[in-house]
Length: 210
Ligand code: URA
Image (cartoon, rainbow, N blue to C red; front, side, top):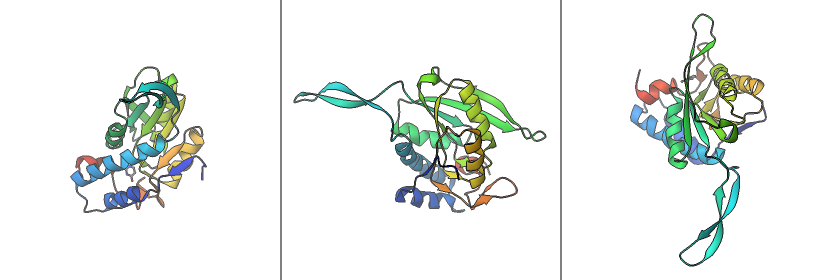
């Protein structure tokens, strides 16, 4: 197992994740739970952001207080399910800049093909957090990270909700410099590339498309 994986085992995260996994959880409940969990994941993934001291004035006195250092961070959603994680993160970090990347797998070559890419300027100088709920084979995650690095990103973290051991392995091999944050590591992938026990298709469950 790659050593750059953080499992966010907070009881609230684990409780909400178990609710999300249940077959009978509705689309509305699923979406709300993902938004709540993503806020908690955002709390963990931003834990080591650098701070700088600035002068502030309270109603009583002048003092100094910490402020986030550097340029605003960037959240990049891997479409479409990534948007479910994005929303809760933006609740916590509303001034973050946002990018989107869309990839599909060519059914013949199985290569990830980009169909959408829009990210903020200045990735070189920003903390970049890439979000996608399901780290399954790791192929599209690895392709997305390569593309985001090509666009200039240097400091990247990857946040998902569930990870398969196979995906962690693949992503760790392709991008050993990118720490992975997840709420759980499940048993395995099935023959269709779904995480088991997992929660099914995150995009379909989020948007009610099945
Ligand atoms: N994508 C999903 O939405 N679910 C899985 O189990 C694997 C990939």
